[in-house]
Length: 579
Image (cartoon, rainbow, N blue to C red):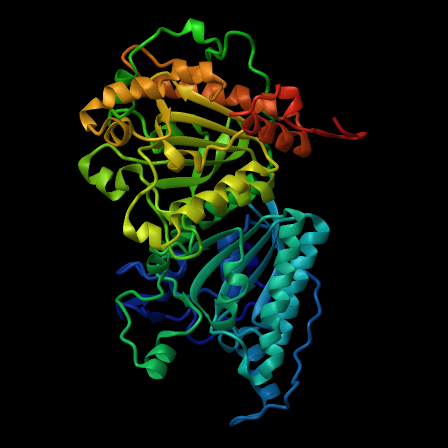
């Protein structure tokens, strides 16, 4: 037994951590059972995470004394009267006797770092954690309880798939549980899934991958078809580390991999942000606290080419630099859930001055190695799809969005075109235009072409003093129109890419002054100015209802290139109709 859950009905099997000596399933090291239990089931030799029973898992995740089992009824049935070498009811009885559980999932109410939630925790020891009619019913009832009580839902998976002894009735649980999670989506209630080893088959292809955030333990395996099935069915050679958490994170299917001892804190933080627990509304910034410039006449005239060179300085703060300085906490989320995790765009959730928000930005890096790994800040389709997923998460959780723009443009390679670069950007433009939460964009360095605009359809667009925003790079413009790339300085001047010109054109609402020597000379001062500016804009937008927010955002972009007066360009919905 572990912690405050002793005596709660958990009966370890013969291979449980209480055994005197236990062999590690990965390195085969023999470890003293009590030492393994004290280390949360992690092998001290190789770090392998040994599977945990449901109650041991809850002891690891829940705040002490906070677990309350839900009173849910789901009797095991034998719809097929199935018999292999023994009747199915006999197998159920044996599983109950050896595990001390009624079924392969335990449902409860708990707290994680103070945030209340409903949890459904699977136990692989009970018939391989298979998805039966009873298991599907319990998970669905847990979701319905979360819906009724307006609480987030935590799902912990450990399963070999659908229980074959129940045939198509077990199969139907995939759709049933998926629909239950969709109801939570419609209600705006956060869902987090923790994938543990192993998670396969119908569980992987239903609720395990439908959480708003999908977390995995190191080395956890997840997939629809297991390696043995693939090898035996189509004789395909599998790559090293196939279907492990690390393999899946690289391919964009997971948000993060979390070491077992840190799970309570990190999932608890996600739940707190998703439920806006202890959120502090952004207070209006008092006069003088935020020193953005809104009058172009107050900015010095400067050559546009100088601004371009300053914007490209690799010593300027990147998105990750800014997030580390302006946010109170931040959890980076990965992947587009389609098959990629573009490193040129990073994003996640955090808090700014007590306000939970979603942040997304281009990331270049500073060193040659970082620039190469981040593709010089040029996103591919997976980057824009990752951004879109985070934007939808912001809409569901009701969180404002901050985007930081610094890119020479979207990646123009063949593979990007094959994967739908134009479509990915276009979808973001449409999505951001109707997002029902406040959106603030800051151009921190280069803002070039649709690659920049793909995350910059915002209520307020600000620009750092030495940043630029343009339809095409000056070199590209010079090569096309002047037929001479050396004419780039002339093209930059003609394109009016500098902050002062952009403020005159109305493309940005304000300019954030940089410290002497520029942001590259004093990261902390630049970050402080950016934080104050963003905080002020979010405070100003906080009072707008969703319909007015969207209408004004659409009006902002509607006026560009229009000869109409601003009050003629849009109809804003009100309680009495349109005006």
